Length: 214
Ligand code: BG6
Ligand code: MG
Image (cartoon, rainbow, N blue to C red; front, side, top):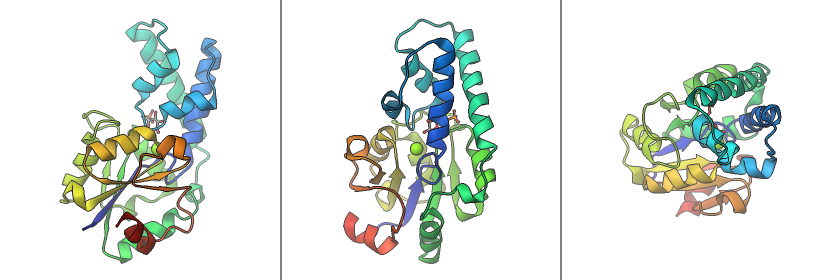
């Protein structure tokens, strides 16, 4: 029986995935490394360090350089987040979260991002969640199942009682590795391995999810 929903944040509840892309793109331009939207798809849901390694595509870099570049990318990213307001929630997100709450379901944020507290503050949605697990937690990041398993424990739910909502291939991998049901938002090329694939959260209702997940 489904009792809880574990939501990724960037690219699911708000369009910060675009800001992550623009910030990485700016760093890549400064370093003279070719980088485009298609390559960025592999960075979705992946930690800051893993993202940088993907962007560097095997170029050698010292630990010190890597740290400086991650810090620079984060500064670019934080500039973008400053523009966010509660209206930056994606269409359908608030409606679904409220419907879940009214229906007695638990919900959590499960994000790889260390900036989760900042983004939640801009969106003012923290009170809609029963648990928050983010990239500041010292466990393996997605695609490992650790963040989702921790969220389930915080909600006192079994993995089989949880549904993961993700926009990233790495996030769907993590949810599956955790033994949870998965909803992928976005193109099939990215999240086609999810149990249910939807374009986004617009007009998505609990009854339909429960029916379609069986
Ligand atoms: C994920 C994003 O939510 O968080 C990734 O999808 C990002 O693009 C990762 O790299 C880590 O974010 P941050 O804010 O800790 O650099
Ligand atoms: Mg995401």
